[in-house]
Image 1: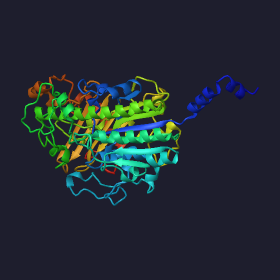
Image 2: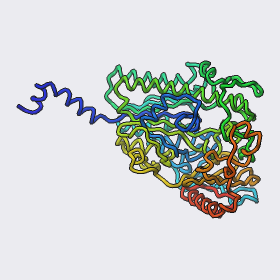
Image 3: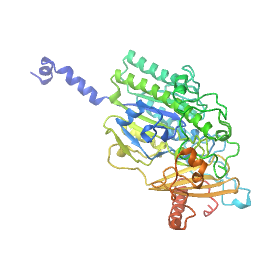
Image 4: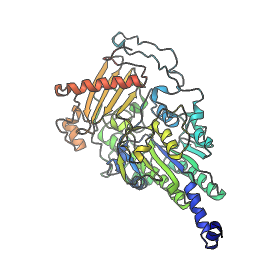
Length: 511
């Protein structure tokens, strides 16, 4: 008797066939993206107030990255280049830009005091057919069912449209029809249709939300929980249960951030230019209300995947397009390079990934495309410049790069630049046509919240409940760290050159 007939006769044929199919089945992908979320809003990054049980569980079953960043932005809408980098795997100065294209003619600054800040352009451009090499198109070609739901606008429209099913809409209301549940309902509908139709194709779901980006309109239930109001007027009293101000809160930033009239700093609903304790506490409560609601929507989808028997065969990515200030350092937006705005939360769970690990990673959002392709065996497009962090997920290495480079160039030029290596971080500001030129040097091991001299003011200490240590300041002007400052300055210039940064700062050699 042949082996197959013998197994069938013993009732083992079906079991063997099922096992073979499970082993050969291609993995699914669920990519979850929040809008404007700092890592420190999650318990896995030290938050003690905001409840996110589903993300906590995801972290327990997967890998948490403690050093994940977006590379930067050349416009005030930081989400636009960030999301374009996610979709394409391109670095910040190699992206397609609407209007002022990197491929256009560069212009020198007319300000005499800033002649080295040339607006020359990158010689390397994104290919014209780049949309056909982005996430949706790549996984369509690989035979996946692809669907996307996310906010509409401030993104990479040509890439977004590549998904087979697209359900995009801005949903920032505090109700089910125009809030985060709308995005959740679209994913649930997609999964339920697959379940009913019995599709055997793998799927790629881009599960994006419009929150916690402002206006942070929470549901009545969540607002009550966090003691916050959607319609808040400065001067209103806040409840005892309203979250306290963050440890690095300031009533104002010590110098101009370099982007006059920036919406995020002057026109956020319920905030405007106010940075007083009560305003920031209320806005933090609204932020948490939106985040917990998102967590609930994520939980619905994870439960459905488990019911379908697909959860264990799905790579799940959770992140945000960038961080956000919400009162930290006296700022409200994401147009800065402090850790709370430059870093992003990043969690990965899936087949073969060891549970409960925390790693540095030193990853950019632009590494996402190559990594997902690497994990699923899908061909990586040649235009992709990101690095795969699959070896980090497998425990073979701790990081994919030693140095992190960041840029904000959305306001006055050349803007801000940052570089980080090990415990050390440098931020430089060359803004307001040369009127603001500042350098900050931080030891993040000793000063993880990037506290500066202003945080030592008695009224700030009274508000935050945190008394900084003497060395928790900007170290750039401390003679003891002159050698380290020089080293970091050289490292920054090296990164600017390697990443085709079209500008130079006031104290750097001209291009």
